[in-house]
Image 1 (spheres, helix red, strand yellow):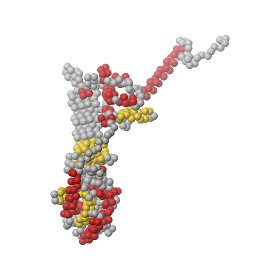
Image 2: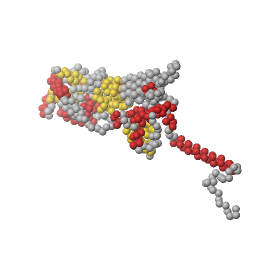
Image 3: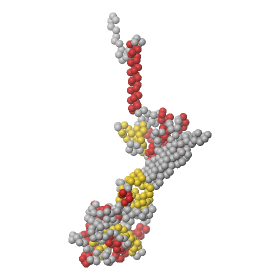
Image 4: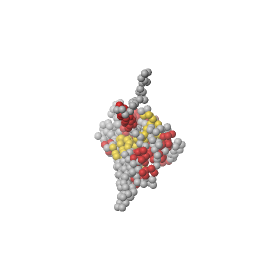
Amino acid sequence: MASFVDRVVLHVSGGTGGHGCVSVKREKFKPLGGPDGGNGGDGGDVILRVDSSSTTLLDYHHLPHRHATNGGNGMGDWRNGKTGETLILPVPDGTVVKSKDGEVLADLVGEGAEYIAAAGGQGGLGNSSLSSQKRKAPGFALLGVPGDERDIVLELKSIADIALVGFPSAGKSSLIAAMSAARPKIADYPFTTLVPNLGVVQAGDVRFTVADVPGLIEGASEGKGLGHNFLRHVERCAALVHVLDCAALETDRDPLGDLDIIEKELEKYAVDMSFAGSDGDVVPLNQRPRLVALNKVDVPDGRDMAEFVRPELEKRGYRVFEVSASSHEGLKALGYAMAEIVRDARASVESAPPRVKTPTLRIRNADAKGGFTIRKEERNLEPLFRVLGDKPVRWVQQTDFTNDEAVGYLADRLAKLGVEDKLFKAGAKPGDAVVIGEGDGVVFDWEPTMIGGAELLAASPRGSDIRIEEFSRPTREEKKEDHQARRDARAAARAELEAERKAGIWTESVNYKHNPPAAPKDGE
């Protein structure tokens, strides 16, 4: 079984940032020396880097889940946590990185080319970094933020100048072996080549790379045979060479028919837009420079067939070469023709003017600089306001909700950012649900009357916030329990008063207002 893999789905995740530390400096004769909690370390990144020693994506096929190292937690005495180590994933030259939706994220060409597949999370600040004139000894620290987590698709597209295309057993691998130092597997049965082969050819002063596409047959663009899996390796090539078998053993095949079938498959194949030229256009495979190599002319029947079809091919506008991979006949002329095309292609790339993107006027996006937006929704027939933005979401991730002082700090940050003002403008009312982030997110009962400012924390012990204690809103269950308790208390009071009335202490029933006595009759 071939150990060549050119497409994998990779699950990558950056390291989680370390938590900040809550600590107070304690020394002899200095019981409260101030906060000294260190910051948490940032999580490591996951980086894809082109490595010339890597030729396949097989490792990621067997181990598709990759995670960078987490950052270390902060410690006392102002000691910061260790930064997570960056995870470098080597990939072959020519690897294209895509999202699961097919969007091209990066085209890694050239030794050392890099792409950050998943960024590490930010480390949380310790209480020493959060101290200020108004908050001298914070009793909380910020939590580390999780790193990016995503699924990406890696596709390997060979870096070759010339591509050999043709039917199985047409002699493509034999041509590469005869023209270069490459030694691909060669046998006399169809689909011998299971992976793309690359060979370096020297023709005069031009050095170029030749690749073959395994087994193109009719319907290859629709998934038949092996060609559909490897047509992507032709996309970077400057020119194609049709290798036609002039000594095919099948009676229903001939060079002209094979050429027509391959041309139709090349026409149906959609080239990736990531390979656009300097003008932004992609040249389809069937419109690129093409040569025709009539192979196996060392066989008598093969030479006769080549002489028979050559006039028709030249009439169609092809440059035709009669070659033999076995006797090396015609290979030198074919090599120089390839070199001429490669030289012209490289010259056009070097002389092409640089692409200048036309500036586009866009409406200023509040979220572009870390701002936020508010979207009004409805949940269970009640209004819900969703706050979206990098800063609010990150701040919520950094908050320890078991610490009232940390929650108060979050409220101050959101108010300073202008969240409350926008909620007012959006029509929010006290008690409405506010969600920060997509999905379930973090839900708050909005209380706009909460007083902001850290100057109110002087009377609060560390780790607490009097504002939250004062303005904490009871839950629905707590309201029901309180209402039932008041009803039970009133019922008990009435029963006690009624008992006193029956004992002669009172003359009127406690239910006098609800059940007044009947009017006295005449004579009574």
